[in-house]
Image (cartoon, rainbow, N blue to C red; front, side, top):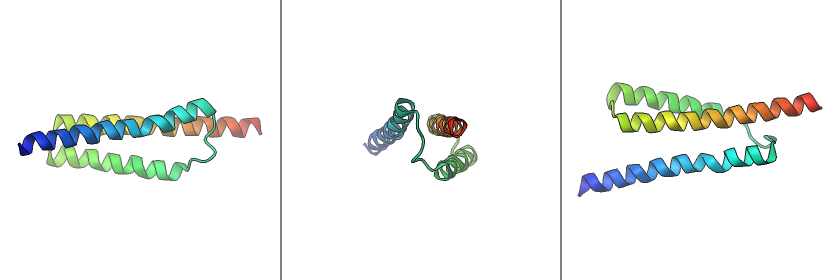
Length: 94
């Protein structure tokens, strides 16, 4: 029973983490503006994710957990890429 609950919690956490990035990405694409987004916080999130990947590899080489964290890192990089693109684009127009 404990294993089932743990798996459901893990699956829920994974789904919520992935879903959490989607509104920001959609908003960036829709408005084509990144005025209110602070890149520093996103770089901290990316550093945290890279550290967590290192921990997973060294301590618990769980493929599912590793895949999830790499996917979350990908979502963070997409967000940062969009923010950087729209901020640069705005600077060129000004």
